[in-house]
Length: 152
Image 1: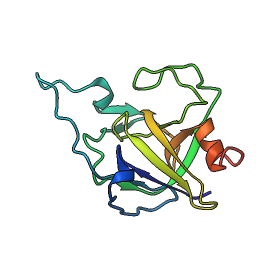
Image 2: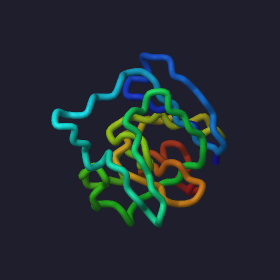
Image 3: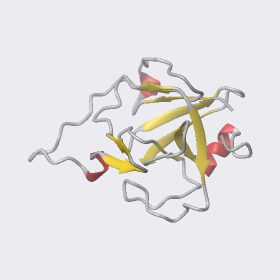
């Protein structure tokens, strides 16, 4: 299943930059400048570098101009009710997603390249930490795109 998603807080009202990378999902960002670091120079915990399975990830300070194409997957009941990276409780029925480095709270437009279905999700978690996958969708988002049965 090939998916395409364009990411931006207000992408509908603005043109997006698009740079395709290898894979089957695309993230494209443009528009508003990111907020500056709060007084005192402290960075939110969700924006600090982190390591999973021996690999270090550095969350982006800005989503502006970011694009990516690759494989999407979804996560559901095994994570339902558990805390997400931004502190929310994961709801598999909400329109959310996990990404390894995009700033938490940004919105992503996702398009299934096989059937043309599109939806918008908010990034509130980190992941997926599975080889060759760049975004994990909530169950409901995957269902809207028609990838719930296939898995990716």
